[in-house]
Length: 138
Image (cartoon, rainbow, N blue to C red; front, side, top):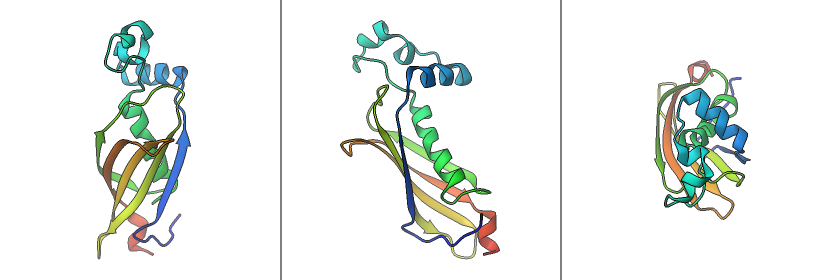
């Protein structure tokens, strides 16, 4: 739904990823890396336990962007993600998107994308660029 957008607007969502979430994503993505699925294997890695697929965690941005900010009708142009720390199953992860620029004369919006844990530690950081067709009509 068209509405006014401004630099500094931001939205967040917090969730946990369960064993079922990870297994469904593994099947959908065909990424069956045992660090995500096998407790015994994961125990031998630097993580010492299973970790959530980074792209599954990063998908939280898609929900925020497509549903809330900028919202329905916006289309991804680019998204980059820097994975800073692992995400473990059943731990709180907060994804935040914040508008950092709106291109003058074009319906292009750039957003800072960040995932943090309950202590504020950055897990993923990046940037998204969105085409927002309804901006040119607003």
